[in-house]
Image (tube, rainbow, N blue to C red; front, side):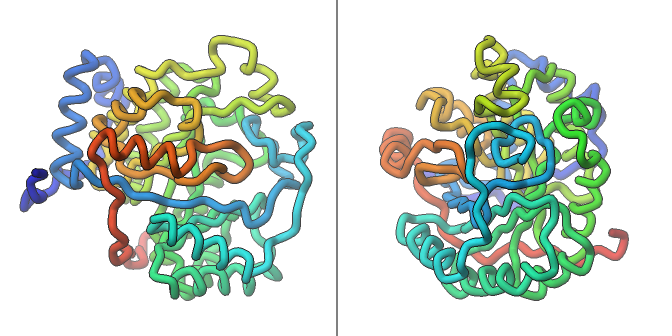
Length: 342
């Protein structure tokens, strides 16, 4: 029997130093997992994992040059660009996701930023999914304050905008927008009162120092992201990083180092949902189990994440049964009040 949550959740800090985060990474692996599990249990139930579904509502043709992404016009992967999906088709997919146990429905469009002409359809999608009783999340690229306000008025619960990697490594991965522009969009989202979803990708040839910088950038934000996706790079041939890393040992992040990253994210951002995102389809059940022990408590379900493969509902259900985990029930979204400082 799992005990109920303690009266007082783990303390939340926003003043982590890089040296402190590096020291966490350097802990003996059993000690790091023990500390992460303690922090996790102070704020979350240890036997529950949130199930989310991610749908690409507009695929390919993105003008950004993100080195990992096969939806970039700079990539030569043969991916065909599509137009924005019909609202009814999106809502049908959301209903199916709910039937499969998902409590959050995430919608992603391969844009640098949405155009004003796209906003009415986006708003219909948000309202329709919310009417089903699911949490809503969008990832549409950069937002203006006005666009963030429109999404907030529609009832959007979460906005995803990943920082991807450390500030120092960022320019080697993406050149068409800056790290600060990423942070500016997060400020617009937070200022509108929408919950923030922001994480990054591990295994892009970065160093541990870069992983420290990535965690530090998120853990020292004025408000931690409510959701922190931790992705393992899926190398796709035709992308800059896919061609560079696909045939080298660097292409797949070491499993223990990946678990360490999850554990450090949990310790430094105790109240956040830490999500195992891309790359799970190639992870062993044992690696995923270690991630859950280290504090991961959210996954994407289904067979596909935007355009790359995912573990699949049947495999996830079997893993949950083996580990004694259960899907987290949908609950009222934890909406933040608009922040005057943002």
